[in-house]
Length: 248
Ligand SMILES: [Zn+2]
Image 1 (cartoon, protein in one colour):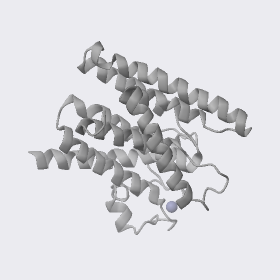
Image 2 (tube, protein in one colour; image 1 turned 120 degrees about the vertical axis):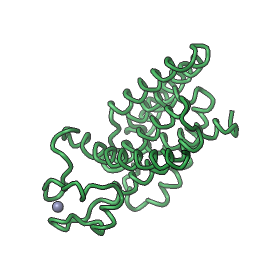
Image 3 (cartoon, protein in one colour; image 1 turned 90 degrees about the horizontal axis):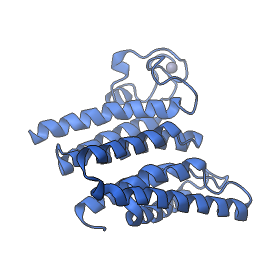
């Protein structure tokens, strides 16, 4: 049964990953999430179902649109694989319990934000507030207020800290130091992790972003590096390490 459910979570993650990559592209470009259906971003021709199978279609079409031969952005493949594999791993670790819900919400938010922020420097309010609300509903449904009241405190503390960092940073550097979306992302992250682990994940995110900054130096030469995906990825890492008992 484990193999069956593991496979089911992998497929679910691949399909959702394909959808997340799509909305990560559509939201910043003001295109409706529902209509039109899947299409080539270059020639705008609608895709047939067999051109839209996660991972497999990309490999079979050798990463090109079958109509106009334009390159299909590899980001969708990466997001599909990331979502599929992390969904499967979440199932293998947490099983079919309520504990799996919050990691799946965080993975989903990370997948959408990876596309929207890396490509368009855009963190969607819908992703921020939607994931915060879903985590809150999960807490209310499956645990007692005593279990999650400190998480709510963490959400407020992290949000205020990031807001202060942004206000001071903007003054010191005389330009936007942190995006408003990065500050707002403290809501779902603080709510998922609480104060201490939230701060720890901020530190990990900064280290990851710094490493990426040096690796991607040429591409992001305006000293701007999207921070949102690193914040959410670190949040997932710390959340899982915390579940395993490696961090507080
Ligand atoms: Zn095309």
